[in-house]
Length: 209
Image (cartoon, rainbow, N blue to C red; front, side):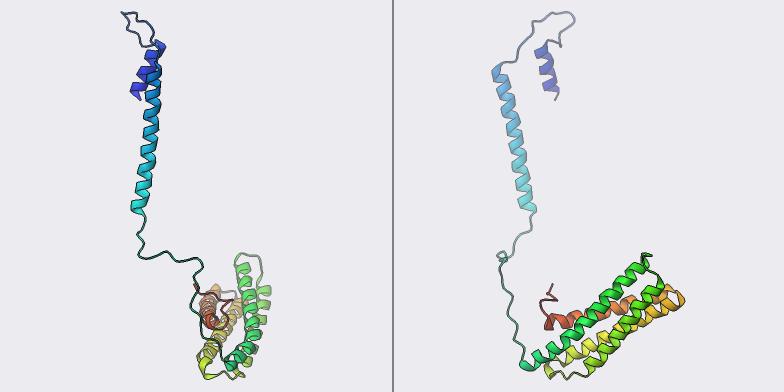
């Protein structure tokens, strides 16, 4: 930088000695050309250095890159008995999911002071009735042995949703937020159980991570 300033001063005749009057000098074409080339080289070196740094710090691949069109291994097809059971469970599942989503939104509205306890209670009452009705309907099903475990898991999830709704109704009655805090983990555990069942029964609705 100092060299450029000095050169500029020299070119403009501003860097004269107080005792010697020198003739103004004019930068020659070769000097300007050398400066431009030097600047271009510096830019090129910086670009190359950056590219090399990126390549060195990039994690090494341990195998070929996965194809974006890779297809997951096909799962065994359901038997006729399994399909019949899953088709019967589907509308029940829809009722449970809709009630849960509506009740969850109600809790969010309540916490944000966008819904009062009376309206939240109405949603909790409706959800509890849906859960109890769904529990009875699921109990009446006769699953094949191959999906008996998923059947019991779904029942357990509905039981947890019922407990969560009861805690919310307690909060609506006495206004204590500890009931709200108790309701959340019950509902979360129930949702996790239903997701595990859904990964087997309804693969499009519950895509694997």
